[in-house]
Length: 236
Ligand SMILES: Nc1ncnc2c1ncn2[C@@H]1O[C@H](COP(=O)(O)OP(=O)(O)OP(=O)(O)O)[C@@H](O)[C@H]1O
Ligand SMILES: [Mg+2]
Image (cartoon, rainbow, N blue to C red; front, side, top):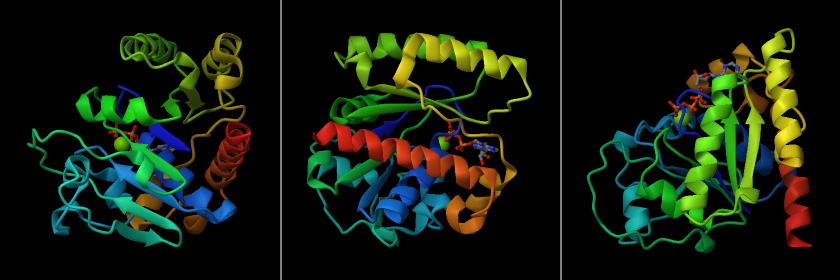
């Protein structure tokens, strides 16, 4: 199963989701996962304890399929194709996700570009983390238009509410509206606002190692279970 994590809005929880979903699948399902850092900010690479500047290859080399070095092993059953902090390449994209592991999770930048389009066309799901605000819903409409323009079915979209606070009326309302409109395409749980999730990357750890008893660990474990169940459905 191949999942592109994308939202054109910045700072909504894409990288946090890539790290904890990827490492969570490896941990709870013991299946192999490849994480791809498509964002020149290289936050995914950093959150896994590596510095893109110190590595001799990156996602641009992989996309051009000119060099196929072994991806970096970052945890048991988890490998990383590191980010390119200084992309300038105009090389054609030849790489395909099919040659990788069972699970591929791509952390996209908060912009639309040709790399994102290449990946979106190959992914089973476009998983979109979003903050529970009304303006975020406008962003989802634009994303759907973008998918339509790329001839990608809207049924591949999945929505994930992040930094959720049940005490806020607006959060509850946005959740209700999204569920009404998108039904089972919305994750049936939420990712609550949890400071442990913000702390974990500076230790290069997933939430399950950094704070296993936190709300963040509970929420991301529930997301992992939801995605595993969807995959079982997909292969039937
Ligand atoms: N559920 C949460 N609770 C608290 N803090 C969070 C949560 N999710 C993410 N954060 C924090 O919010 C910030 C933005 O999250 P993240 O980097 O995952 O977003 P992003 O969508 O990848 O951003 P960008 O668009 O810049 O790539 C980070 O500091 C992260 O640690
Ligand atoms: Mg990010």
